[in-house]
Length: 312
Ligand SMILES: CCCC(=O)SCCNC(=O)CCNC(=O)[C@H](O)C(C)(C)COP(=O)(O)OP(=O)(O)OC[C@H]1O[C@@H](n2cnc3c(N)ncnc32)[C@H](O)[C@@H]1OP(=O)(O)O
Image (tube, rainbow, N blue to C red; front, side, top):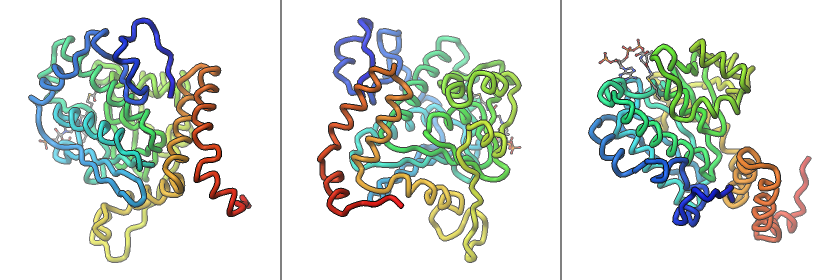
């Protein structure tokens, strides 16, 4: 996808595909290796990636259940590496992001927040996460955040970096930053405004109000309320056959039909939608033309014509 290039963008960056370009670079005083080393001093938890090669869906788990899946420094690095891995997965079509033990994520690990107390350190962490979540948002995969339990603070921000949010009964998305004397810093405010509009975003941010499934659906913050059904053999709601839980299966069922078919077509749909969202109209039209040109007369198009596809 072509993005506007300003004179301030260094030449080396211009050669990078736009999808893997973050927002901040050395020109903005951001040195990734330096902050990466600093973040690795706060270990704990993990970001787990399981690629389902056949269906082209990656399941990414925020895994720090002892701290309600709060993001330690090493998990921020893990997430960066997971996104980088998914950028290099040409067969990939979908991404399902969820939290371990049926809760989404309680934001930054408050122990790391306390240790990174200088505003310089806070800014570096903020730029690192903005870069990572921008790259997550720009992955050529249809992405879904499955919200079980609570998505708080940075956890709420993380949900907004996905294309869709699916919620289960009793779950909530809550930008609690105000109660921490903060505002979002992982790009969550900018993305929230684009999702729900200025007034609703300001209300959620200034009031630190919890959005449950019904409100989130009404606002357009959530896309569906899942009613997961445990299989009869389940001993707990989260143990229904060893495949990660009823909610995860329900979310996969929601995603699968949306990523059915040839990877190049699914990825193209994401690219043109993202161009439309991110670029001025004329550039978006040119980007759409370029993507269209890669599909017209290509195998998936020829196969559809040959079988005389009807759309009843
Ligand atoms: C730019 C990013 C900005 C940010 O993300 S700032 C961080 C915003 N998040 C928060 O402030 C969340 C604070 N935590 C809470 O409100 C509650 O712990 C929460 C998530 C509602 C869960 O409540 P409960 O179900 O009653 O469970 P609990 O409080 O006993 O928590 C279980 C264990 O998890 C820990 N925990 C939860 N959230 C954490 C966090 N963000 N960082 C570090 N540790 C966290 C909590 O301390 C507790 O640990 P322990 O069992 O006491 O050792």
